[in-house]
Image (cartoon, rainbow, N blue to C red):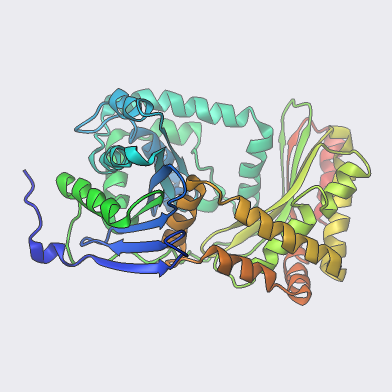
Length: 452
């Protein structure tokens, strides 16, 4: 049996109030436990639910080419059983109280979470902590789950509207970790062994790499005690003097411009992403970029939606988006259209991007985008799951917390000149293009003109 830490070691825990809410509502607290495990909570007494999550500082970006898909594979395996619970025990424990449990893997982090009634929070904490600290990663489970992951890859490839974004990442980053798919490929998944995944697990699931986040009708001190007890019981708190790792700094990823990648598929639509390098998630201009993105393709009144869909009916779905990583980012425009309309859609999108790069947006468009972005920011944080995501990701990726009021103030403070400046810098670059669809040879040859 693992010995419990001494009272001296237990006294090392440090608690801070990061955001002070009104009457206890919206208060964000953080406790750093001995061993470097961080626990961040946001209190919302007006609800009857709570969402508990554990964020791991590991994503597909941390994989070598041979390990591509290992992070996502591991996400699956942590649901397959621990020293305390079988896979059925894990799922049935939350089902029995009407809870929800899931996980997701991204390029720079992984998250495991459960949403339950506030009274059932201790159960959620015990189950999720057990999964993170006591996973067995048995060879037979690796073999069984391999089939499920291969089916997931096949499902993604059957959805070209999803697959085109993976293709665009490859178009922009090439054979770099950011350019490879989070799921891995059929070849890399087939090559992964239980031993290699176990080593990956031990390396990246140390407490210094983890952030525990919890939001809802909760008590911070109780959450800390329950999390601490779960990790101590598993004997995984480690060196009491260990410090949490700092937010990811990135690796100066090489990005490309003017590249074209086409994937021939017998689909009813052609799926297109036209884009260019964007901003890192820590860039001070990200607030202006958010306003620009909203005005360009963030809603029904946006330029791209109006020009491509409303005025010409060339596409049902058309939007723009941004993706920010530690050291770089992407800006992209997606459209799904009939193959015969691809060149018209690309021409209009390119014309709009070039026009905004050269002339900027009108003050009216910027004002409307600021209002839309502020409203969507607040509405997107109306449930405990969204709040848990915000505080967990903020601690892991930025190492700090920002209140909703401060976020709204940052958006409101964006000036037209700042939006026009970031439009020149980002949209003025030569774009790259990714297309999936049933394109004929002559059509494919002409697509290079869209990025010329």
